[in-house]
Image (cartoon, one colour):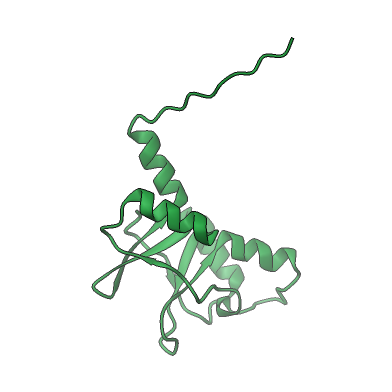
Length: 130
């Protein structure tokens, strides 16, 4: 989990947020809107989809492209539980909340890196053709 979370305001432009994500080498930013009931998230996938579908008309506010219904994780979740939630929901980032505060973001990359770092191996059968 990354404890450094990129947070942005709802009025920031999608272009500006994409630049910040690129500069910080992160795949998601948490959108904090004091007028909303909770945080939202904007991901690389959201940015790509907006441009691919020609839904960007210039300096669109990021709130127009953010996902508001997000799944939160607890710091005591296992990696398996987090990965299962990501697969079920078809997303790659979980905002981690502890006592009502954002304490980090867990990405699919974090999970894979952790598992690979623990010495995980994979035996892949090789099929030979004659």
